[in-house]
Every structure is written in structure tokens, then in C-alpha cells.
Image: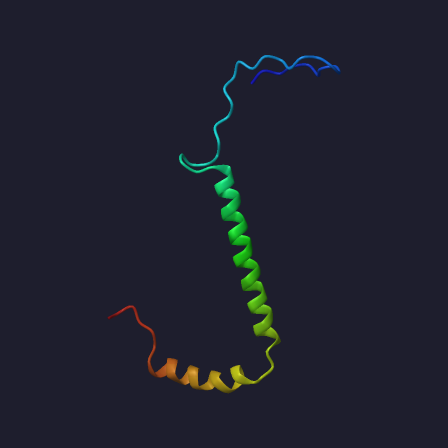
Amino acid sequence: MKMYPPRSAGAAEPPRDEAEPPSSSPPGHSDAGEAEARAAQLRRNQIAIGLLAEWRADDSGYDEQTWPLVKELLKRHPLSIRD
């Protein structure tokens, strides 16, 4: 990497004889595509956070009423890797 002294106002850009660094994107993917993917993931995360907040605020008693049944059924029919 070449180091250039600081330029004064109005000075021309130093010549670039080095190639631009490669993009971190895989071939066929653009940075715009990455930005869209990040934005979509952010939207999904925000939706999930909203659902979790709604679930935590639920005071209907449904969970407390249903959990003993679910727990008993899981004991009787445990999940298994075997098929």
C-alpha cells in the first residue's frame, strides 16, 4: 500500500496504480442486494420483537392453564430421534 502525503486544497488526486480492493460480496451479489437482505432481516426481527412483547404482556392465564397439560403430554410422548 502506498502512502501519500496530505494534499493541500486544490491539489490533484494522486495517481492510483493499485487495483481497487475486491468487494466483500460473493460473485453475482451486489452491495445493494446485501442492503436489501439486511433491511428484510431487520423487519423480521422487529416483527418478532413485537410478537414477543405481546406474548409477555398477555395476562389471560392461557399459558398457566395450558402448560400442565402440555407438560404431561410431553412426558407421556417424549420427542425422539428414532422413527
